Amino acid sequence: MLAAVTQVTHYLAMSISLWMAFHLFARGYPNRITLRAVLALLAIAVFFLDTYNHNHLFAHNSGPFRAALLVIALDCWYSVTFALLSPNSQTRYRRMEIAIYLLGAASVLSLVFSGGETMPDANNLHTARLDGNLTNVVYGAAQIAAAAGTLFNLMIHDQIRKTTEGRYYLYASSLLVLSLMYGIISLMSPASFPRVIEDGLVFGGIFLLGLSVARHQSLVERRTIWQDFPIAMLGMTVIVSFYLVICVLLGIPSTYWATLTGLIITTHSMYDLGREAVERWRAREENRLRRKPRLQTDSNDDALRLHLDGRLALLLRALNAAEGLIAIPQNDKLTAVSSRGALPVDSELPVVSATNEGVFRIDETLPPLLWASQSFEGMQPIALVAIGRPRAKLAYSSGELDLLEEFTEDIGTLTSINMAGKAASKPEADRILSEPILPQESDDFVKTVEEALRHFGDSLFLGQSPLADQVGISGDSHIERGNQVQSLLREAIQSLRPQGERPPEPLPREWYNHVVLHDAYIKGVPNREVIARLYVSEGTFHRIRRHAGRGVARYLAEKKRTGN
Image 1 (cartoon, rainbow, N blue to C red):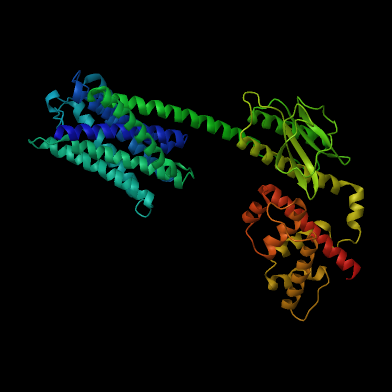
Image 2 (tube, one colour):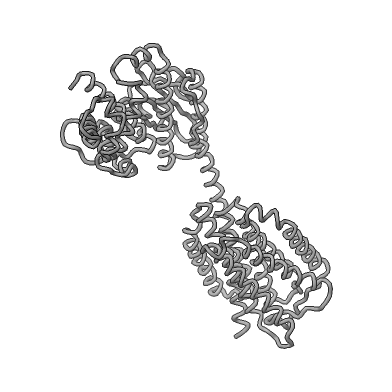
């Protein structure tokens, strides 16, 4: 009975530790705390694998090797808790850290080269009996130092006893201390103690350490590792169980089960690790694409073209597309300003329907381009991005087409800002802005209107807003003035409403200006819900809102000028 329980404990400890090591490494790299926990889990996994095989095969005395692995695991455990300390505490106790590492390294080297720690073959079910030589003394001192240092790190940490995450680390370290106490008692007593208790405590501590790191990755690093942890573990359990059933059916002796399980977990985890690496590479490429380097609004056309050409190159690299094109309005026509393998630069594009929403096929209009997406300001397209066929596959995925649409919205925002900057720098623009269409400088008045819209439901704020004076509102009290401003803003928003009943979602583009202001400010609908109703990106939503806000400002200015 004791032999069966011991073997099952070693098998489960090896399997779970090995899987957790690969899982945490795949999800947590390059976090230093995670890497240290991974080393501890790998050392414990190999420790229990060798213990399981030694109990069955008795081929050689691998006790020194297992003891060295245990020291490595304990030092990594200590390193995890040391990394949790504040920078000041780490600097203060750096010498103690170095001393513990040096003692552990001396113990590992002594065990590997001198073989001082022995586990007799006839005593595999009970704790080892050690001789009092120097190697074993250093080995015991290294274990005690690592355990004491771990508890010390946790005790001096202010938040350990106050947070759930800290208590996870504390419970895990408590199991470590109990394991060492059990080993010391068994060493001092003439009676034989079952080693399954000591090994179970070590595994329990390492397992809780893995859970602590997973929780740390979820709560501190904002990773999803804590959410997919049980699902991934269940999936690996099903896979290993399936192979074990095959082993039983084929009559494979249990002697080899641990080794086979280790190979199964390693191969499947390596696949998961490779997939995670590819996903991270793709995520980095997309993040590079999403970064929007600043372009000064007074930049000339050459600077804009150079900037857009670099952005197009990043897009084609991320999508692995052969051809691509960016077009923006010039002289009231969409003109190619950046092109790779498509139309020549400065070519005018054929008329593209302004009713096309999202990503649409364009292969019949602009071969060899295949997919295109437009960005609008009001009802006018301000950017078009098109891509050709993928280099290495038959079709793009839905996620890649979503990336094209998001990229187009970014280009539209960049183009809109650049066009506004160019317009503001023209003498004609200065003359138009100086005309009494708006009561103050245009930008200041628009900002005042936007601020009033954000406080649409607050009559007290509106009554004290500069907008009340700018549009000629008078009243006996600021509350009355606020109510009049509110009514005027409602009237201005209503002026943006198209004729007829509001259609069902998805709404036509001509309703965007009215819906963005009416739903967000009058009805108080959250922005994310308005974005969902319009089926647009967040960047497009903000651009529509700015455009509609300027429309409200112009309505108020013209109303004041005409005296209505």
